[in-house]
Length: 341
Ligand SMILES: Nc1ncnc2c1ncn2[C@@H]1O[C@H](COP(=O)(O)OP(=O)(O)OP(=O)(O)O)[C@@H](O)[C@H]1O
Image (tube, rainbow, N blue to C red):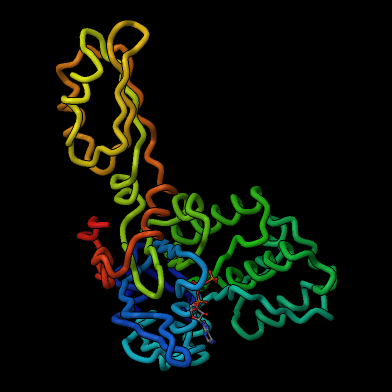
């Protein structure tokens, strides 16, 4: 194990200490189903004790990536290492060190939640006494009801509890908040943060950008089996699109246009006369804000609005981008150079 710090007697539980190295490393993974590519050279690394989110539209390859990590499916080519073990050798020992929530949860319906979780605990445990009840309480989940009578959201909660209950070193969670109401989503995100703080690693997929933004340290955006971009949430935010509006006095609308037109990252520029006799401009701004700040520094501003970057808008733009247009990062592991979208 490449953890620094103490581990439990079994070595299974994650230490609440600093962790080093990668929990997951994927290099050039491809998967073809009946001649149709589902993954096309995906590479990324997930540092230990971090939260890594993968987002992408339907069919992007999120589930296929996760299944490859767990050896549920075999990749056509490429390589994946999970907790230091080749994913192709993912036997029961490795599985016990992982908590997995599949995207399509199929649960035995005839028994109640408690018995079902006890069954999973026997397989993937040990589970600390009282832990299951604590987690169920956090989700207001009734463990005495037969599983088949639970709503979709409550079944999802059971799935989350079984993934977290044995405090595995690595959590692989496919669309974990699907079916959860907003309060429960927040509870789930708290659990993810606590897991990371305890030294566990979380790899999760989502359609919900705001959720990834709240939970993840790093994000990979997957589309058509390729990673469009890997970035920290901060980097994504910095390269995101902001909307701005300025009002200046002592200047006409055409003059204001001349000052601003052609600035790096500025789009959709519209200038008009303002009510106070000056000029008003609205535009969107992508990336570095410094050239814009410099351009307006000599203006006499009466108003300036620079909105919070819209992560959703910039990610949707990435979804919609052209693969053949050369804008796709073939999956660099550090992903820090991938601003060209
Ligand atoms: N077992 C399979 N047999 C054939 N094709 C498959 C199989 N599993 C996945 N695919 C195909 O691989 C591609 C990627 O699917 P995958 O389920 O990984 O996407 P996803 O990003 O998880 O999508 P979603 O958000 O809808 O769950 C899709 O085109 C899908 O139809």
